[in-house]
Length: 423
View 1 (tube, rainbow, N blue to C red):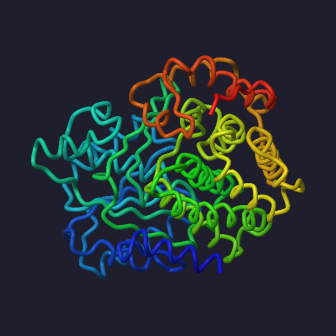
View 2 (cartoon, helix red, strand yellow):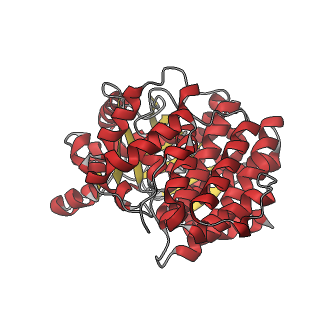
């Protein structure tokens, strides 16, 4: 039942522009047809990627698409250096179409490389919301067609308008939000997830939860609330039920399909609304944590902070965790901050079950410098959208008083120091 509901939502989301499921790589040529005859492939390199790339190349050949060259994909977190390298190699190849194959970092970097290939400039010119579209309209151009082939159940970059790029020199991640960068078509063959290491499986699944959770929290009083609630219910339920099973048996087709569907629903969520606190703080933890895990650690603490303002979605989330056996309290007896604490503790319990730390002080190399970096990043105008998306909207002037205790709580696990704003 959950699987059918998930597929129905994906059909509603992407229609026929998305090919997914077991064996989908054989249709890479079909997905790429109609955009040109010369392609470059930006590809990740991971266990099993060689056979997958061979399948892609054969499929392209059957669709009379010439593969001009293969370009090595990105390192984790899409460093700027990899972006500029990939953009330059695309320029040298002069293709009609770009195909990316890999996880979210390779796909994000390819999306950004397509922007630079078409519009030139520096990537800093495009950080923020709608800047790519602005330049496209000014110059009367259109981006080079991009077909994104996902290889892991994670960020859903293959379906969305988001690009994350990291400056390794500062340890900060910045964001492009623009409909223009959504890949023209997408493919996801679930078979490619069978070789993923346990940590990657956890990171991807928890990123899916963060997408659905944060969008739902921010949907209060907005016209898309019902859709956000439906997506979150199915997405988070799939992860809580099937992530432990996928860790126990990485070759379980049912468990891996559940996580792939959850990841794509997370993508639908962030195309419906926006993420907020957990994602914003995660951007300053890139040097010590993968993205999904950073969001997962932060979200219980933001849950307590938001709790008085999000009682309706919080009851939905609480019911999901209760059905998963992670809450034994009668949630009907709780409200406001106390309801938020009960849900946060259920998140801690799930983290323990999958072997994931629930506070930052347990992470190697964490220091107060990360908190200072997160505070500084939250005040960056280019990340203002995350503050605005919060169910308790926060201004720059409020960050020191209210966000700093959240970060301190996330470091130590002490929920009592989190302050709540009057509702």
